Image (cartoon, rainbow, N blue to C red; front, side):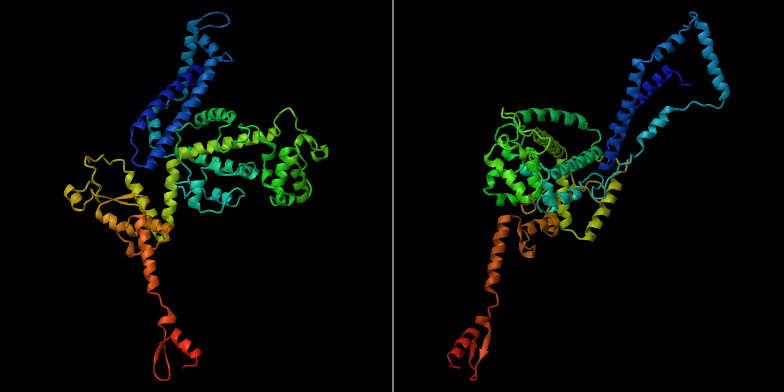
Length: 509
């Protein structure tokens, strides 16, 4: 029955209105847990995508490029080739409707509201890795291995990498112009974008990157891109001597050979010179450009198909400048993604440090506890509890009595500098935290054993002073065999080891 173009148009408008009402109804429900919030965001995103697709179809219908809509309206008005006959068009349409119901006598009217209401109950399928814990943490282990095994990276711990990967401007520029660094940046940015789309589906990344690209173009033209400033003050023009290798640091060809064949090859290729030969030949060819401008070199040093640079101030290596700009734009996008995922990065680092202080059994127990807690939070029938004093919750999920709150001193705040100025409420929680993972990790970072001697000590300065005193005291009580080991002569006289040895050498014993 919805074969006509006008009926399709009406049904499309109805579908858009129903989906808009469903979005409003879904957003009015406050999700009970982070998992429910994620499901809600993806449901809304799917409905928005459906609205967008349906709207595009409506635009095509209203543009009416094939005049199908115009012809159908004319046919409904009874306009034919012979003239206008409204009644014939009406009775033809009535005949078509009766014929349809005669062929389908059991057809019933389907309530579309029930079908659309089911959309609010569905749980979208979202793929997360086990390490990501349903969007709570990042999983950068593959990129971490790629970083520490690269020439531009350094061998550091995974927890330290979580602080470093968001600061690409600290990497030397000569290491950034390599293919390995570009592939690493692309993989890292691809993962962060994919993670952000799964955890924040309602955010418009295209609009964010569009604004970022506009700002980047302006800063690039002014030479203000962080980590890409150069001697000329313009990001686009890379100086000849600083293309890949800074020759000011090398005084001989032998020193330049230590850079390696790959770096020499990239530097020669950036200047349009021949890249073949042994390591020594490459180094000699590149060392020529230290004191001789590239445009004055003999033509035999240039590769086939390459053009010698002009002397009128044109850019020496336009391909190199374009490559630098693309890499700088990738770095800008990476920094923007790290800003958007700042809370997740901090949460990931805390989780990594926490795992380092836990055994396998403790991690399994904590994972089970989180699963049980997530199931408890997802109870839709749970009502909002009136708690104006913001009292802690008891075992039954209700605020504890006020007299119990005062009895345990839960209003007292204890801060521990060793734990990163973390606050503990109540004396019991404060005393118990000395054996927990956060305090143990802080003591391990200070290089101090977490023994009973350091209980009640929360200041880093006091902990270091006490540790020095303990070490001094252990030095006084240390066993000294020269003075404390005893020897007896034939007459029964007792000497320490040093005195006995001296008398024996003199022949007095």
